[in-house]
Length: 512
Image (cartoon, rainbow, N blue to C red):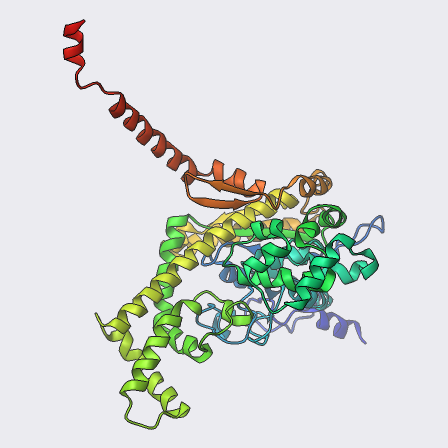
């Protein structure tokens, strides 16, 4: 291969140009030099002194903050390819509900793991890791920069660190766990579980492992099923997996990051994110969300696996049950599936334009639930990012998109979000400094050992159940808890004042 052809293969076809044709030899050589330089930076050369860790960029943040837009905008400055790390956007279908970036919005930037997984399978954190690792290798081989984008923080953790909090059982085969290594004391419980393994209830988990049951909310059916299935396969209690010798073993792996990462987090003020989420749901309704949910709707469906876990599917179940029954009862045509389906599709838009009917009220309730649960997701994502930063010592570059979400100009978005992240990435590519400090790396094992994952705490003041000392400490230090305690103290003080008040005081004083 000639030098010119070799250089040409290094040029990223998606890398932005000034609009002119690359016909000048000097320009071609310059672009080739850029590609060669980028290759060296991505490979993170270190003179063979230690294992080479490829460089990647990770963009995280709560839903609605602008992660996908930022990643695409970065393509104007870097030759990037994007790997989607949103646990619902990986599935095929529900493009409106899951807010997938459209082909037009992608602006020619290659996207991977976006709408490529069957909606009926369970795509776990381990599955994402196993799919993303070869993708990253291929992207770097093309002299492009891998950019991981998503709000599913367990996906990000699974990729960056070999340690998986909730998918650790799936790693047992890699540690050659055999029946001989299973704790004999657990074998009786395992045999009892296998005889009734179709029961995936919280009560069943409590009977098998009460410590683990305290960790999981009774309505978290997905995680309950996950723990029971893996217990059946391994014979190791979930609570012993995450606390004790197994955790200690994997804790040593936790600090050994798989990649040299540049972490960027797009965030915004909660009130602004809440408002943006509500507005986005309204746009989704106008964009055909109801049609999508109806297409995936099944009576008494399993909402713990695949795409049906997405926020916005289960919320519409009551509405669709009532609406379909209403259509069936009013239809004069034979109740064939084809006729019913066609009639429902024709009438869904009419429901949106109606008002003050029982069906419309059910629809409004579903929309309100979708907004509320999405706002709750935003808060969980924010908490999870803080936990990852605390536990693994990730050096995260935070940028604030509040003003942009409030409707400021595109210049504001570029100045406050795109440019700071681009600057951080440039510095990251130009130096060999890792994204996790040595002190933080060495402290991971100690943090994992000290972190109490399983003890259940109850806050009587807030009527909340917290699982693990870490969550408890975060809760009692939170603004909402302190505000609640302040109100209770004020109310108690007022109550005591009224109780101790002596209405006959003047009379008693005169007797004295």
